[in-house]
Length: 84
Image 1 (cartoon, helix red, strand yellow):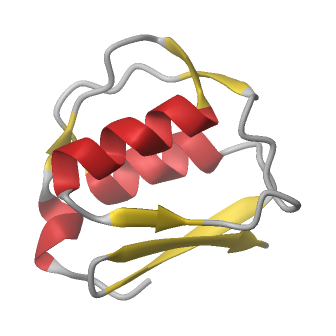
Image 2 (tube, rainbow, N blue to C red; image 1 turned 90 degrees about the vertical axis):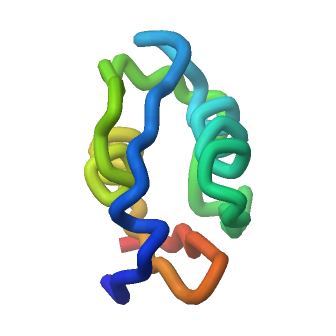
Protein backbone atom coordinates (compact mmCIF):
# COMPACT_ATOMS: atom_id res chain seq x y z
CA UNK A 1 0.00 0.00 0.00
CA UNK A 2 1.28 3.39 -0.93
CA UNK A 3 1.38 5.62 2.15
CA UNK A 4 0.19 9.21 2.27
CA UNK A 5 -0.32 11.76 5.00
CA UNK A 6 -4.03 10.94 4.87
CA UNK A 7 -3.38 7.31 5.81
CA UNK A 8 -2.40 8.46 9.28
CA UNK A 9 -5.64 10.41 9.83
CA UNK A 10 -7.92 9.22 12.60
CA UNK A 11 -11.30 7.84 11.59
CA UNK A 12 -14.39 7.35 13.75
CA UNK A 13 -17.49 5.60 12.45
CA UNK A 14 -20.86 6.55 13.96
CA UNK A 15 -22.16 3.01 14.38
CA UNK A 16 -20.89 -0.49 15.09
CA UNK A 17 -23.26 -1.95 12.47
CA UNK A 18 -22.81 0.05 9.30
CA UNK A 19 -22.98 -0.82 5.61
CA UNK A 20 -19.78 -0.75 3.62
CA UNK A 21 -21.30 2.01 1.48
CA UNK A 22 -22.04 4.18 4.54
CA UNK A 23 -18.57 3.50 5.94
CA UNK A 24 -17.01 4.63 2.65
CA UNK A 25 -19.13 7.81 2.75
CA UNK A 26 -17.92 8.56 6.29
CA UNK A 27 -14.31 7.99 5.27
CA UNK A 28 -14.75 10.39 2.35
CA UNK A 29 -16.22 13.05 4.67
CA UNK A 30 -13.51 12.67 7.29
CA UNK A 31 -10.51 12.50 4.94
CA UNK A 32 -11.52 14.55 1.91
CA UNK A 33 -10.42 11.59 -0.21
CA UNK A 34 -12.56 9.69 -2.71
CA UNK A 35 -13.20 5.97 -2.36
CA UNK A 36 -13.19 4.37 -5.81
CA UNK A 37 -14.58 0.89 -6.44
CA UNK A 38 -16.35 -1.32 -8.95
CA UNK A 39 -19.74 -2.34 -7.59
CA UNK A 40 -19.34 -5.76 -9.22
CA UNK A 41 -16.46 -6.69 -6.89
CA UNK A 42 -17.86 -5.52 -3.54
CA UNK A 43 -21.22 -5.82 -1.81
CA UNK A 44 -21.84 -2.25 -0.65
CA UNK A 45 -24.92 -3.28 1.36
CA UNK A 46 -22.99 -5.74 3.52
CA UNK A 47 -23.15 -4.81 7.20
CA UNK A 48 -19.85 -4.62 9.01
CA UNK A 49 -19.63 -4.86 12.76
CA UNK A 50 -16.52 -2.80 13.35
CA UNK A 51 -15.88 -0.60 16.34
CA UNK A 52 -13.94 2.31 14.87
CA UNK A 53 -13.02 5.11 17.22
CA UNK A 54 -9.96 7.22 16.35
CA UNK A 55 -8.33 4.45 14.29
CA UNK A 56 -5.96 5.10 11.40
CA UNK A 57 -7.32 5.11 7.86
CA UNK A 58 -5.37 1.93 7.03
CA UNK A 59 -6.68 0.14 10.12
CA UNK A 60 -10.25 1.28 9.43
CA UNK A 61 -10.18 0.11 5.82
CA UNK A 62 -8.68 -3.23 6.85
CA UNK A 63 -11.56 -3.75 9.32
CA UNK A 64 -14.23 -2.77 6.81
CA UNK A 65 -12.82 -4.95 4.03
CA UNK A 66 -11.85 -7.88 6.29
CA UNK A 67 -14.32 -10.43 4.89
CA UNK A 68 -15.19 -8.73 1.60
CA UNK A 69 -12.59 -10.37 -0.63
CA UNK A 70 -11.26 -6.91 -1.46
CA UNK A 71 -8.14 -4.92 -0.74
CA UNK A 72 -7.20 -1.26 -1.06
CA UNK A 73 -4.44 1.00 -2.29
CA UNK A 74 -4.09 4.70 -1.46
CA UNK A 75 -2.90 6.88 -4.35
CA UNK A 76 -2.86 10.65 -4.02
CA UNK A 77 -6.40 11.57 -2.86
CA UNK A 78 -7.97 8.26 -3.91
CA UNK A 79 -8.63 5.07 -2.02
CA UNK A 80 -8.89 2.38 -4.66
CA UNK A 81 -10.80 -0.77 -3.71
CA UNK A 82 -10.18 -3.88 -5.80
CA UNK A 83 -10.68 -7.64 -5.66
CA UNK A 84 -7.88 -9.55 -3.93
